[in-house]
Image (cartoon, rainbow, N blue to C red):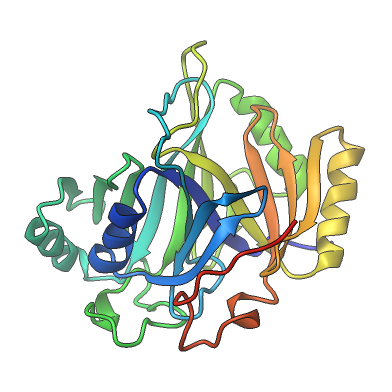
Length: 283
């Protein structure tokens, strides 16, 4: 049976391209690996950040909507994105955030820092349990390798339908009760029960979808058939140029994407030039 290998990317909404670029590249030190457009709305910029190669599991992506409104997080929504940092780097990040006057809360006991990005997206930086650095550290970065962000480690999924979401993740993806995507790196989907009937609404700083990694197109076909077998809503199976994607709705109506590892971002730019060109698509 094919397996989910971990996170691929997480996609959210931003109001300001300029503020978003500054925060994720200059302050957090990620590399802009692709400037492209939303393939369902070619007027909407789509930014991808990650490690030097744009490795699946390191990717945060943002759709840019200058007129986007406030988000409302109530019954069902994706919450805090946890990013792992190297063991022993917590104080470095504390000092760095203070330098740029970024508001944060630090928990020394949990070796973590909580902050929000310019749009209100909740982030957590937490020390990895291992000393491993990113698979491909970012060359020429103003942040030294031993302090660079490693990868996505956890996403919080808030829902009134915890039991149904638990069953969905186990039945469709065969995840364990702890919902570990990759036990080696401790990547995890964490279910948190919400206690309101008020509806959530997407807006600035909210997450549109999460994407998990599979190896091949055949794996996508397998999980598509499995979703259909168990009666879950399959939205589409589509070529996204840099990877192929399957979109399925969870019982709470939250979108989960499965995406292939390849071909990757060097299909239309060299590794050295990643993120320097604005890539557009045609319908």
